[in-house]
Amino acid sequence: MHAGQNGIYSGYMIQANFPNQFGMEAPRPTGNARTASIIGMFCLILYGYGIAKHRIFYLIASFCFAAVLFYQGRGAWVALLITAIIILQLIPKDDRPNFGNIVRFITISAGMLLSIWLTIYGIANIAGNSNDVELFRNFMQKDNVTSGRLFLWENGFNAFLSSPLFGLGGQSDRVHLNHNVSNMLIYILMCRGVIGLIFSTLPIVKPLTFIWTLSRNKTDNKNNVTTGITFCTIAIFIFLSVRGLVENSYSLFNIDFLLVVPTIWYLSLQHDKKQKNRL
Image 1 (cartoon, helix red, strand yellow):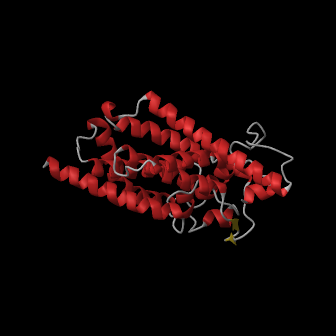
Image 2: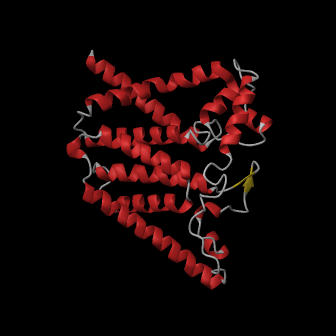
């Protein structure tokens, strides 16, 4: 509705005027792309494993991936692609979707994306704001690909070097850069230094070990419910971790933090369970 009223066809250009919280517009297109990605993966995997059997979940997943394209969250695009590759490698060949199923899903998502644009165009016509139609950002313009992140990363890393052992304290990117540093690793180093990085890495050792073991042995669990939930958890964990290359994933007081804690906990339990079964 906001896009239609203002004639905005590029989802990345949508920035709500209200509410404005903590100095940032809400909702943000990058956050919307993140949320749509997670809901889409969740519905698609549950539907694929027969846990959520109603076709509405398949359509919700299609709409969510159309929304990811619409909002043009580049970090979400990259994280989704890498997540999909890893998940397909973890799934046994006999259980993987065939090429036809993939093409059908992409086609339905593309159709929903077109429907989103047509809906906006219709509302914009009624509101009298349908003059300029710009569907995608011009990524060829300077800094449009990275949005100035390379500059932030360089300055953030230089700030970390001034106190490499214990860092500069919480929210140090806001203090020293006056901006979100948009990189999970540099954010940890800036806030808590090398010591903080060590403690931050410890909780994800078991999940990473479990995923690595699963990639070597594949899943031998015939329980579709357990397998589906496990792959949902792995997908969300990988997505948020990869997205951490361009955002502060896992950050305290962040939605990502509330999403990643249950996934780390669940995958750690699965790791321990697998180790007990071996014994």
